[in-house]
Length: 469
View 1: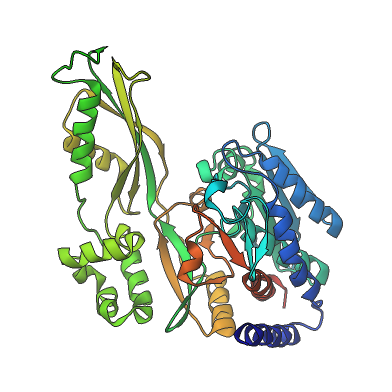
View 2 (view 1 turned 180 degrees about the vertical axis):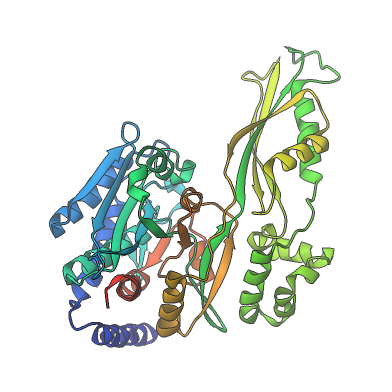
Protein backbone atom coordinates (compact mmCIF):
# COMPACT_ATOMS: atom_id res chain seq x y z
CA UNK A 1 0.00 0.00 0.00
CA UNK A 2 2.86 2.37 0.80
CA UNK A 3 4.51 1.81 -2.61
CA UNK A 4 1.18 2.46 -4.37
CA UNK A 5 0.77 5.74 -2.47
CA UNK A 6 4.29 6.79 -3.48
CA UNK A 7 3.56 6.08 -7.14
CA UNK A 8 0.26 7.97 -6.99
CA UNK A 9 1.97 10.94 -5.32
CA UNK A 10 4.66 11.00 -8.00
CA UNK A 11 2.09 10.81 -10.81
CA UNK A 12 0.20 13.71 -9.28
CA UNK A 13 3.40 15.74 -8.91
CA UNK A 14 4.36 14.97 -12.49
CA UNK A 15 1.00 16.11 -13.85
CA UNK A 16 1.15 19.33 -11.86
CA UNK A 17 4.66 20.07 -13.08
CA UNK A 18 3.79 19.41 -16.70
CA UNK A 19 0.69 21.56 -16.43
CA UNK A 20 2.67 24.41 -14.87
CA UNK A 21 5.30 24.50 -17.61
CA UNK A 22 5.21 26.73 -20.65
CA UNK A 23 2.50 26.01 -23.17
CA UNK A 24 5.22 25.49 -25.77
CA UNK A 25 6.89 22.80 -23.68
CA UNK A 26 6.25 19.24 -24.82
CA UNK A 27 4.90 16.40 -22.74
CA UNK A 28 8.04 15.00 -21.13
CA UNK A 29 6.41 11.71 -20.06
CA UNK A 30 8.06 9.68 -22.89
CA UNK A 31 11.47 11.00 -21.85
CA UNK A 32 10.72 10.16 -18.23
CA UNK A 33 9.64 6.61 -19.05
CA UNK A 34 12.66 5.92 -21.25
CA UNK A 35 15.14 6.91 -18.53
CA UNK A 36 15.16 3.58 -16.65
CA UNK A 37 15.60 1.38 -19.77
CA UNK A 38 18.35 3.66 -21.04
CA UNK A 39 20.12 3.45 -17.69
CA UNK A 40 19.91 -0.35 -17.71
CA UNK A 41 21.57 -0.37 -21.13
CA UNK A 42 24.25 2.08 -20.02
CA UNK A 43 25.10 0.01 -16.93
CA UNK A 44 25.61 -3.03 -19.15
CA UNK A 45 28.41 -1.22 -21.01
CA UNK A 46 31.71 -2.18 -19.35
CA UNK A 47 33.63 1.03 -18.63
CA UNK A 48 35.46 -0.12 -15.50
CA UNK A 49 38.56 1.99 -14.87
CA UNK A 50 41.19 0.65 -15.19
CA UNK A 51 41.36 0.40 -18.13
CA UNK A 52 38.28 2.60 -18.75
CA UNK A 53 37.27 1.83 -22.34
CA UNK A 54 35.00 4.87 -22.16
CA UNK A 55 34.67 4.85 -25.97
CA UNK A 56 32.14 2.04 -25.44
CA UNK A 57 30.05 4.46 -23.40
CA UNK A 58 30.48 7.14 -26.06
CA UNK A 59 29.09 4.71 -28.66
CA UNK A 60 26.08 3.96 -26.43
CA UNK A 61 25.29 7.61 -25.69
CA UNK A 62 25.97 8.57 -29.29
CA UNK A 63 23.38 6.08 -30.47
CA UNK A 64 20.75 7.66 -28.19
CA UNK A 65 21.64 11.10 -29.53
CA UNK A 66 21.47 9.77 -33.10
CA UNK A 67 17.98 8.42 -32.46
CA UNK A 68 16.94 11.88 -31.27
CA UNK A 69 18.51 13.56 -34.29
CA UNK A 70 20.94 15.60 -32.19
CA UNK A 71 24.48 16.05 -33.57
CA UNK A 72 27.41 15.43 -31.28
CA UNK A 73 31.18 15.23 -31.34
CA UNK A 74 33.58 12.86 -29.66
CA UNK A 75 37.31 12.45 -29.25
CA UNK A 76 39.69 9.89 -27.79
CA UNK A 77 42.38 11.28 -25.54
CA UNK A 78 44.11 7.88 -25.85
CA UNK A 79 43.03 4.60 -27.47
CA UNK A 80 39.67 3.65 -25.97
CA UNK A 81 39.46 6.75 -23.77
CA UNK A 82 36.45 8.46 -25.32
CA UNK A 83 34.76 11.77 -24.51
CA UNK A 84 31.51 13.12 -25.97
CA UNK A 85 29.67 16.42 -26.14
CA UNK A 86 26.51 17.81 -27.74
CA UNK A 87 25.12 21.34 -27.77
CA UNK A 88 21.73 23.03 -27.96
CA UNK A 89 22.33 26.53 -29.24
CA UNK A 90 20.88 29.57 -27.54
CA UNK A 91 18.80 32.18 -29.37
CA UNK A 92 20.35 35.66 -29.28
CA UNK A 93 18.26 38.49 -27.83
CA UNK A 94 17.39 41.73 -29.66
CA UNK A 95 20.96 42.93 -29.13
CA UNK A 96 22.42 39.70 -30.49
CA UNK A 97 23.56 38.42 -27.08
CA UNK A 98 23.18 35.15 -25.20
CA UNK A 99 23.85 34.34 -21.56
CA UNK A 100 26.89 32.27 -20.46
CA UNK A 101 26.48 28.63 -21.45
CA UNK A 102 25.55 25.76 -19.11
CA UNK A 103 27.27 22.35 -19.16
CA UNK A 104 25.65 19.15 -17.88
CA UNK A 105 28.62 16.92 -17.01
CA UNK A 106 29.04 13.32 -15.92
CA UNK A 107 31.82 10.76 -16.21
CA UNK A 108 31.54 7.52 -18.15
CA UNK A 109 34.09 5.44 -16.23
CA UNK A 110 33.25 3.46 -13.10
CA UNK A 111 35.33 1.80 -10.39
CA UNK A 112 35.90 -1.97 -10.32
CA UNK A 113 33.35 -4.28 -8.71
CA UNK A 114 33.92 -7.71 -7.18
CA UNK A 115 31.01 -9.83 -8.42
CA UNK A 116 31.55 -12.36 -5.61
CA UNK A 117 30.23 -9.80 -3.11
CA UNK A 118 27.23 -8.59 -5.13
CA UNK A 119 23.75 -10.09 -5.09
CA UNK A 120 23.50 -9.52 -8.87
CA UNK A 121 25.97 -9.18 -11.76
CA UNK A 122 27.54 -5.69 -11.32
CA UNK A 123 27.18 -5.05 -15.07
CA UNK A 124 23.65 -6.43 -15.43
CA UNK A 125 21.49 -3.39 -14.70
CA UNK A 126 19.11 -5.85 -13.07
CA UNK A 127 15.95 -4.42 -11.49
CA UNK A 128 14.99 -5.73 -8.07
CA UNK A 129 12.22 -4.35 -5.81
CA UNK A 130 12.10 -0.99 -7.57
CA UNK A 131 15.89 -0.50 -7.75
CA UNK A 132 18.28 -0.66 -10.68
CA UNK A 133 21.53 -2.38 -9.68
CA UNK A 134 24.88 -1.88 -11.36
CA UNK A 135 28.31 -0.36 -10.99
CA UNK A 136 27.85 3.32 -11.76
CA UNK A 137 24.13 3.44 -10.96
CA UNK A 138 24.81 6.46 -8.74
CA UNK A 139 28.42 7.25 -9.65
CA UNK A 140 27.60 8.54 -12.28
CA UNK A 141 25.76 6.72 -15.07
CA UNK A 142 22.40 7.35 -13.38
CA UNK A 143 23.12 11.07 -13.39
CA UNK A 144 24.33 10.89 -16.99
CA UNK A 145 21.12 9.30 -18.24
CA UNK A 146 18.88 11.69 -16.31
CA UNK A 147 20.86 14.62 -17.71
CA UNK A 148 20.52 13.15 -21.21
CA UNK A 149 16.76 12.62 -20.94
CA UNK A 150 16.21 16.18 -19.70
CA UNK A 151 18.53 17.46 -22.45
CA UNK A 152 16.61 15.51 -25.12
CA UNK A 153 13.28 16.81 -23.78
CA UNK A 154 14.57 20.37 -23.87
CA UNK A 155 15.70 19.88 -27.48
CA UNK A 156 12.37 18.36 -28.50
CA UNK A 157 10.45 21.24 -26.92
CA UNK A 158 12.04 23.63 -29.47
CA UNK A 159 11.77 26.45 -26.95
CA UNK A 160 14.12 29.40 -27.56
CA UNK A 161 17.04 29.22 -25.16
CA UNK A 162 18.77 32.19 -23.56
CA UNK A 163 22.11 30.35 -23.58
CA UNK A 164 23.86 27.32 -25.08
CA UNK A 165 23.25 24.09 -23.17
CA UNK A 166 25.92 21.39 -23.40
CA UNK A 167 25.67 17.70 -22.60
CA UNK A 168 29.12 16.32 -21.85
CA UNK A 169 30.34 12.82 -20.92
CA UNK A 170 34.01 12.34 -20.08
CA UNK A 171 36.57 9.67 -19.30
CA UNK A 172 38.82 8.86 -16.37
CA UNK A 173 37.27 10.82 -13.48
CA UNK A 174 37.82 7.89 -11.14
CA UNK A 175 41.58 8.12 -11.74
CA UNK A 176 41.90 11.90 -11.73
CA UNK A 177 40.29 12.95 -15.02
CA UNK A 178 43.53 13.40 -16.95
CA UNK A 179 42.16 11.49 -19.97
CA UNK A 180 38.78 13.19 -19.66
CA UNK A 181 37.81 16.59 -18.32
CA UNK A 182 41.40 17.60 -17.71
CA UNK A 183 42.40 16.58 -21.23
CA UNK A 184 39.51 18.52 -22.79
CA UNK A 185 40.36 21.65 -20.81
CA UNK A 186 43.95 21.47 -22.02
CA UNK A 187 43.42 20.28 -25.60
CA UNK A 188 39.98 21.61 -26.52
CA UNK A 189 39.76 24.90 -24.62
CA UNK A 190 37.45 26.42 -27.25
CA UNK A 191 34.65 24.21 -25.92
CA UNK A 192 34.58 26.19 -22.68
CA UNK A 193 35.20 29.70 -24.02
CA UNK A 194 31.59 30.83 -23.48
CA UNK A 195 30.70 28.53 -20.57
CA UNK A 196 29.68 30.23 -17.35
CA UNK A 197 28.01 27.39 -15.43
CA UNK A 198 28.44 23.66 -14.94
CA UNK A 199 26.40 21.01 -13.13
CA UNK A 200 28.27 17.88 -12.08
CA UNK A 201 28.16 15.13 -9.46
CA UNK A 202 28.81 15.88 -5.81
CA UNK A 203 25.49 16.96 -4.31
CA UNK A 204 21.92 15.66 -4.08
CA UNK A 205 18.82 15.64 -1.95
CA UNK A 206 18.93 13.76 1.35
CA UNK A 207 15.86 12.42 3.10
CA UNK A 208 16.05 12.75 6.86
CA UNK A 209 13.36 12.01 9.45
CA UNK A 210 12.89 15.77 9.76
CA UNK A 211 12.42 16.28 6.01
CA UNK A 212 14.40 16.69 2.79
CA UNK A 213 17.53 18.83 2.41
CA UNK A 214 19.04 19.49 -1.00
CA UNK A 215 22.82 19.65 -0.82
CA UNK A 216 24.80 21.50 -3.51
CA UNK A 217 28.57 21.02 -3.52
CA UNK A 218 30.43 24.33 -3.94
CA UNK A 219 33.95 23.29 -2.94
CA UNK A 220 35.85 20.18 -1.94
CA UNK A 221 38.85 18.99 -0.03
CA UNK A 222 41.95 18.98 -2.20
CA UNK A 223 43.57 15.62 -2.95
CA UNK A 224 47.29 15.34 -2.40
CA UNK A 225 48.41 11.82 -3.32
CA UNK A 226 51.90 10.96 -2.17
CA UNK A 227 54.42 8.15 -2.55
CA UNK A 228 56.90 7.52 0.26
CA UNK A 229 60.03 5.59 -0.73
CA UNK A 230 62.43 4.32 1.92
CA UNK A 231 65.92 3.05 1.10
CA UNK A 232 68.25 0.70 2.95
CA UNK A 233 70.85 -2.03 2.50
CA UNK A 234 69.52 -5.13 0.77
CA UNK A 235 70.29 -8.56 2.15
CA UNK A 236 69.10 -12.05 3.00
CA UNK A 237 66.03 -12.52 5.16
CA UNK A 238 67.85 -15.07 7.28
CA UNK A 239 70.18 -12.39 8.65
CA UNK A 240 68.00 -9.60 10.14
CA UNK A 241 69.52 -6.11 10.10
CA UNK A 242 69.02 -3.38 12.68
CA UNK A 243 67.35 -1.13 10.09
CA UNK A 244 66.06 -1.90 6.59
CA UNK A 245 64.03 -0.02 4.01
CA UNK A 246 60.97 -1.90 5.28
CA UNK A 247 61.45 -1.14 8.98
CA UNK A 248 62.34 2.45 8.15
CA UNK A 249 59.14 2.82 6.13
CA UNK A 250 57.00 1.21 8.84
CA UNK A 251 58.41 3.56 11.45
CA UNK A 252 57.66 6.60 9.26
CA UNK A 253 54.14 5.41 8.48
CA UNK A 254 53.41 4.81 12.15
CA UNK A 255 54.30 8.42 12.87
CA UNK A 256 51.84 9.51 10.19
CA UNK A 257 49.17 7.16 11.54
CA UNK A 258 49.47 8.52 15.05
CA UNK A 259 49.30 12.16 13.94
CA UNK A 260 46.03 14.00 14.39
CA UNK A 261 46.24 17.08 12.22
CA UNK A 262 44.92 20.26 13.84
CA UNK A 263 41.20 20.97 13.76
CA UNK A 264 40.42 23.72 11.27
CA UNK A 265 36.75 24.60 10.73
CA UNK A 266 36.75 26.64 7.53
CA UNK A 267 33.76 28.96 6.91
CA UNK A 268 32.27 26.78 4.15
CA UNK A 269 32.30 23.74 6.44
CA UNK A 270 30.80 25.72 9.34
CA UNK A 271 27.97 26.90 7.07
CA UNK A 272 27.36 23.34 5.88
CA UNK A 273 27.13 21.93 9.40
CA UNK A 274 24.85 24.78 10.46
CA UNK A 275 22.55 24.09 7.51
CA UNK A 276 22.40 20.40 8.38
CA UNK A 277 21.80 21.01 12.10
CA UNK A 278 17.97 20.96 11.95
CA UNK A 279 18.11 17.49 10.37
CA UNK A 280 20.22 15.90 13.11
CA UNK A 281 19.07 14.03 16.21
CA UNK A 282 18.90 15.87 19.51
CA UNK A 283 22.37 14.67 20.51
CA UNK A 284 24.03 16.33 17.49
CA UNK A 285 21.80 19.28 16.66
CA UNK A 286 23.48 21.80 18.94
CA UNK A 287 26.99 20.66 18.05
CA UNK A 288 26.31 20.92 14.31
CA UNK A 289 24.90 24.42 14.75
CA UNK A 290 28.09 25.48 16.53
CA UNK A 291 30.62 23.07 15.07
CA UNK A 292 33.58 25.44 15.50
CA UNK A 293 33.13 25.29 19.26
CA UNK A 294 32.06 21.64 19.39
CA UNK A 295 35.21 20.63 17.48
CA UNK A 296 37.31 21.77 20.44
CA UNK A 297 35.89 18.84 22.44
CA UNK A 298 38.12 15.81 21.74
CA UNK A 299 35.46 13.41 23.06
CA UNK A 300 32.88 14.79 20.64
CA UNK A 301 35.36 14.55 17.76
CA UNK A 302 36.06 10.91 18.59
CA UNK A 303 32.35 10.13 18.66
CA UNK A 304 31.81 11.92 15.36
CA UNK A 305 34.68 10.02 13.78
CA UNK A 306 33.16 6.71 14.85
CA UNK A 307 29.62 7.68 13.87
CA UNK A 308 30.25 9.70 10.71
CA UNK A 309 33.86 9.54 9.41
CA UNK A 310 32.97 11.64 6.36
CA UNK A 311 31.73 14.54 8.49
CA UNK A 312 34.73 14.30 10.80
CA UNK A 313 37.12 14.42 7.82
CA UNK A 314 35.82 17.89 6.90
CA UNK A 315 37.20 19.34 10.13
CA UNK A 316 40.90 18.71 9.51
CA UNK A 317 43.46 17.57 6.96
CA UNK A 318 43.69 13.80 6.68
CA UNK A 319 46.04 11.13 5.34
CA UNK A 320 45.08 7.50 4.70
CA UNK A 321 47.76 4.86 4.15
CA UNK A 322 46.40 2.90 1.19
CA UNK A 323 49.24 1.04 -0.57
CA UNK A 324 52.40 -0.79 0.48
CA UNK A 325 55.17 -2.28 -1.67
CA UNK A 326 58.18 -4.22 -0.41
CA UNK A 327 60.18 -7.20 -1.55
CA UNK A 328 59.14 -9.39 -4.46
CA UNK A 329 60.49 -12.45 -2.62
CA UNK A 330 59.95 -13.52 0.96
CA UNK A 331 63.62 -14.16 1.76
CA UNK A 332 65.00 -10.97 0.22
CA UNK A 333 65.39 -7.75 2.18
CA UNK A 334 64.65 -5.05 -0.44
CA UNK A 335 66.80 -2.03 -1.14
CA UNK A 336 63.63 0.07 -1.46
CA UNK A 337 60.15 -0.08 0.01
CA UNK A 338 57.31 2.29 -0.71
CA UNK A 339 53.88 3.33 0.47
CA UNK A 340 51.19 5.57 -0.97
CA UNK A 341 49.12 8.03 1.00
CA UNK A 342 45.76 9.53 0.08
CA UNK A 343 45.93 12.92 1.79
CA UNK A 344 43.04 15.39 1.59
CA UNK A 345 43.55 19.03 2.48
CA UNK A 346 40.97 21.62 3.42
CA UNK A 347 40.47 24.24 0.70
CA UNK A 348 42.36 26.97 2.59
CA UNK A 349 45.55 24.93 2.92
CA UNK A 350 48.91 25.37 1.17
CA UNK A 351 50.05 21.95 -0.16
CA UNK A 352 53.73 22.87 0.06
CA UNK A 353 53.40 23.85 3.71
CA UNK A 354 51.59 20.58 4.38
CA UNK A 355 54.39 18.62 2.71
CA UNK A 356 56.96 20.41 4.88
CA UNK A 357 54.91 19.51 7.96
CA UNK A 358 54.70 15.87 6.84
CA UNK A 359 58.49 15.68 6.38
CA UNK A 360 58.92 16.89 9.97
CA UNK A 361 56.47 14.25 11.19
CA UNK A 362 58.26 11.42 9.37
CA UNK A 363 61.68 12.81 10.34
CA UNK A 364 63.78 10.48 8.21
CA UNK A 365 66.09 11.70 5.45
CA UNK A 366 66.14 8.21 3.94
CA UNK A 367 62.43 8.47 3.10
CA UNK A 368 61.72 10.46 -0.05
CA UNK A 369 58.25 11.99 -0.49
CA UNK A 370 57.01 12.24 -4.07
CA UNK A 371 53.84 14.00 -5.17
CA UNK A 372 51.71 11.72 -7.38
CA UNK A 373 48.77 14.07 -7.85
CA UNK A 374 47.54 17.35 -6.46
CA UNK A 375 44.94 19.94 -7.43
CA UNK A 376 44.38 23.58 -6.61
CA UNK A 377 41.58 24.62 -4.23
CA UNK A 378 38.65 26.57 -5.62
CA UNK A 379 35.15 27.54 -4.45
CA UNK A 380 32.07 28.47 -6.47
CA UNK A 381 29.95 31.40 -5.29
CA UNK A 382 26.31 30.92 -4.35
CA UNK A 383 25.03 34.40 -5.26
CA UNK A 384 24.28 33.34 -8.85
CA UNK A 385 21.14 32.98 -10.99
CA UNK A 386 21.74 29.21 -11.28
CA UNK A 387 21.99 28.72 -7.53
CA UNK A 388 18.76 30.68 -7.07
CA UNK A 389 17.06 28.55 -9.72
CA UNK A 390 18.14 25.35 -7.94
CA UNK A 391 16.83 26.86 -4.72
CA UNK A 392 13.41 27.53 -6.26
CA UNK A 393 13.16 24.02 -7.70
CA UNK A 394 14.18 22.45 -4.38
CA UNK A 395 11.51 24.43 -2.58
CA UNK A 396 8.79 23.68 -5.15
CA UNK A 397 9.62 19.98 -5.51
CA UNK A 398 10.41 19.01 -1.95
CA UNK A 399 9.77 22.01 0.30
CA UNK A 400 13.50 21.66 0.90
CA UNK A 401 16.21 23.97 2.15
CA UNK A 402 19.25 24.33 -0.13
CA UNK A 403 22.53 23.74 1.70
CA UNK A 404 25.92 24.63 0.15
CA UNK A 405 28.29 21.79 1.01
CA UNK A 406 31.93 20.80 1.02
CA UNK A 407 32.82 17.41 -0.48
CA UNK A 408 35.38 15.22 1.23
CA UNK A 409 36.16 13.54 -2.09
CA UNK A 410 37.05 15.23 -5.36
CA UNK A 411 35.26 15.47 -8.70
CA UNK A 412 36.13 16.93 -12.10
CA UNK A 413 34.63 20.28 -11.05
CA UNK A 414 38.02 21.62 -9.98
CA UNK A 415 39.18 21.70 -13.62
CA UNK A 416 36.38 24.10 -14.45
CA UNK A 417 36.57 26.19 -11.29
CA UNK A 418 40.18 26.86 -12.24
CA UNK A 419 38.80 28.40 -15.47
CA UNK A 420 36.44 30.66 -13.51
CA UNK A 421 33.37 28.57 -14.40
CA UNK A 422 30.77 28.42 -11.64
CA UNK A 423 30.50 24.70 -10.95
CA UNK A 424 28.01 23.01 -8.65
CA UNK A 425 27.77 19.42 -7.55
CA UNK A 426 24.06 18.79 -8.11
CA UNK A 427 22.18 15.58 -8.87
CA UNK A 428 18.36 15.84 -9.05
CA UNK A 429 17.87 12.84 -6.76
CA UNK A 430 16.74 12.38 -3.17
CA UNK A 431 18.51 9.58 -1.31
CA UNK A 432 18.12 8.01 2.09
CA UNK A 433 21.51 7.40 3.77
CA UNK A 434 21.42 3.63 3.24
CA UNK A 435 21.33 4.09 -0.54
CA UNK A 436 24.88 5.48 -0.54
CA UNK A 437 26.50 2.35 0.85
CA UNK A 438 26.89 0.87 -2.64
CA UNK A 439 28.89 3.76 -4.09
CA UNK A 440 32.40 2.30 -4.62
CA UNK A 441 31.06 -0.65 -2.58
CA UNK A 442 28.80 -3.64 -3.12
CA UNK A 443 25.31 -3.64 -4.65
CA UNK A 444 25.36 -0.08 -5.94
CA UNK A 445 21.78 0.81 -6.87
CA UNK A 446 19.37 3.64 -7.59
CA UNK A 447 15.59 3.54 -7.36
CA UNK A 448 13.50 3.73 -10.50
CA UNK A 449 11.50 6.45 -8.74
CA UNK A 450 14.66 8.53 -8.28
CA UNK A 451 15.53 8.15 -11.95
CA UNK A 452 12.09 9.14 -13.23
CA UNK A 453 11.56 11.98 -10.78
CA UNK A 454 15.11 13.12 -11.49
CA UNK A 455 14.25 13.72 -15.15
CA UNK A 456 11.24 15.83 -14.13
CA UNK A 457 13.27 17.83 -11.61
CA UNK A 458 16.16 18.53 -13.95
CA UNK A 459 13.88 19.42 -16.84
CA UNK A 460 12.11 21.93 -14.61
CA UNK A 461 15.48 23.43 -13.64
CA UNK A 462 16.59 23.64 -17.29
CA UNK A 463 13.31 25.25 -18.26
CA UNK A 464 13.61 27.88 -15.55
CA UNK A 465 17.26 28.66 -16.18
CA UNK A 466 17.71 28.33 -19.94
CA UNK A 467 14.38 29.07 -21.69
CA UNK A 468 14.14 32.62 -23.00
CA UNK A 469 11.22 34.50 -21.45
